[in-house]
Image 1 (tube, rainbow, N blue to C red):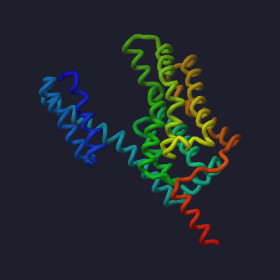
Image 2 (image 1 turned 180 degrees about the vertical axis):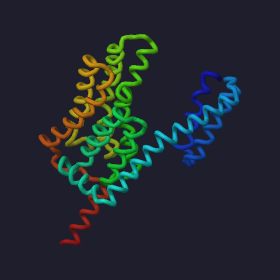
Image 3 (image 1 turned 30 degrees about the horizontal axis):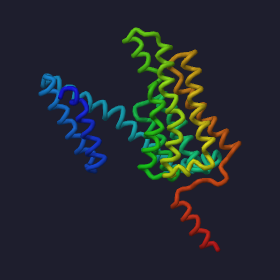
Image 4 (image 1 turned 120 degrees about the vertical axis):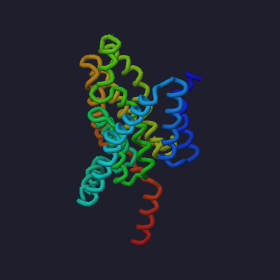
Length: 278
């Protein structure tokens, strides 16, 4: 029972949010109660210490994480109000009008960079807001950014988790960094492919952009490998994300898809507009 107890609150959240469709605040409060009961009854945690842990967790969630999300959508609304979002759309359209490539640039490249320099949810909140502004559905934008965040998050903000691990274990930091890079290698290729398939809801969605998608992932992995081997854990995710962004742009310019992929609703709207004009 003790071995399974740490999993129960997380399992509850997955079931309540994913299957029972329970409101998040209710599911989280019940999850908190489960954690508290387990800590006090199974692990013999002091009541006062459990209360302090609850308060600390609440403050941590409200300040760095919720604040980042609020700031991201505040920036999004300001961009709408000032018209700056139009310039963002024009800039992204100048790079590529294909929704698949836009997702790779914003969620994979830019999102990975934000994770490496800021963390605390910025890699999901900010890119998701940009994707929503470009016409992505909010839920899809969030899912895509979460997928994209799985690779860059390993090194954390400027390598702090890896440096901390090296200090605690008293192991040499460069071998640890290389071990992380080798573990991330398959995900560097898989995640960009998963992003495109998630957007298009089909493996056929890779048609026309499979090479750009592979280049985006491989460039991220190669840059991480070189930096981790010769520099350390502070810069692999930063340099890898920058290289992935630039490589994706270059590939999309040199070998663009024959036809820009749009969402079905966008194609229907364009067809309706064409009929009206005719």
